[in-house]
Image 1 (cartoon, rainbow, N blue to C red):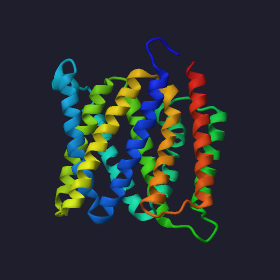
Image 2 (image 1 turned 120 degrees about the vertical axis):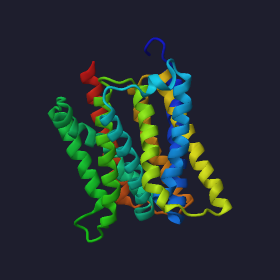
Image 3 (image 1 turned 45 degrees about the horizontal axis):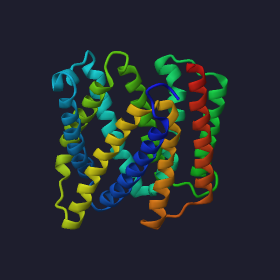
Length: 290
């Protein structure tokens, strides 16, 4: 274990983070099934931006230091892209369900690995390319394009994974000049502004019960990001990142019990293949970085 790190605590914090985010996904699925997706994500972003601003005020230099960047266009594109990706993913929940959406979304680390070469000029060896291809075989197993049961709606969560992969790559690029605190600030504030512009026109009155769930959604969003920040404070990202895949397990349980979804055998098999390929890719990156 690296000096100054508590890997065991970091792992437990990552597990707690994935559990909270899974609950957030379940609540998002419920609310987006009853109300416009844009409104749901907009309100969620208002609370997220408030959390980001409060967090920035507590750091050295306050808001001015957090907002200072030499690449405002890049940071704005990042914020807008993440907000749009969340809208696409939440909409996917209403189309194909939690389980299948998350199963397909787990391919995003492989998309990051595949795109890091042409976009960031990072070397991608044949082993990682092989893992990427295996991962896409897993996606095909989930989608079943040749079995006569292919649902075009399943493309929506794949688009979400692709958008998140681009967001992750832009975050890496932004990190060359900006701190993580600055990127976090711009992500929350720009995302909230963007969602307000596109979502305010979709405002709908909520019944009291759903107002409660909306409050829970906002709280889980803030709690999840707080736990994630603490996780990376106490442990190296390379040690805890593999446990992020547990979100699919927790989401599957919620989908099965709460929403009566079915975990089809091809989805389970495809998800396992994607996760294993993703873990191998992550391990290869860790080996090369050493």
